[in-house]
Image 1 (cartoon, rainbow, N blue to C red):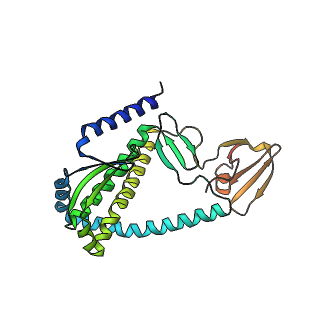
Image 2: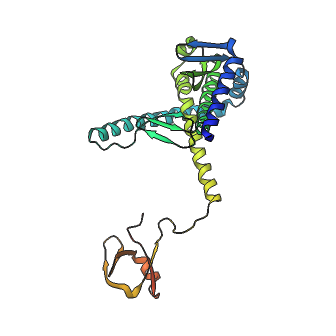
Image 3: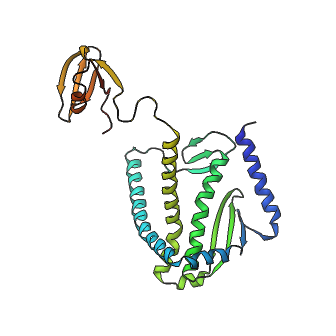
Length: 270
């Protein structure tokens, strides 16, 4: 049996078990299962008040980043609308769902991924997002009524921090902005951290093998060259009987006294 199918079955069984064990605390609202708890509220409040100065600066930066993210979002929508209008669109946004398979499957509007990828991604997205909302509420002395999780269509998990809506409506604009921007800013920061870690990890694990990026990958004998042309962009075009190659003026000078030249088959990415 495929590993993806086994993992998917285990995932469903764990969900069913958790729902059964907490059946007295679970609410059903249409196609949504909701679980609420008051645990961890004190931990979030303690975390917010202990590092108040740091969080205040952090959430103010979140407000600034939210403005730029909003501008980017507007640009993204307009840019995609133009591409669709001129029939230039590529793969667009897609709903990402777990599927009992070990491979990825894409169709317009839907990306099916192995369950373990999906679960890891959901945890990485939800945890910092909701914790940040909770810390922002506590920092601004607004009550956290509960923390919770939900299952949309009894399968797709999510989480929330429930505020006191009356207090939130009466709060100053700066406080509201800090609370609303907190989750997205934390997600953005976590994304940057993971990209950086991925870059560092891959760079330390893998070694270059073969042709380096932006490095000439072909060697030719000087005697094969029939004609040379100086191009305006700092390249020299080398014409042989069977092919045409490119080399930078600087690289040509470095190999002037050699019988063989390292050259590009095409214009390098510079």
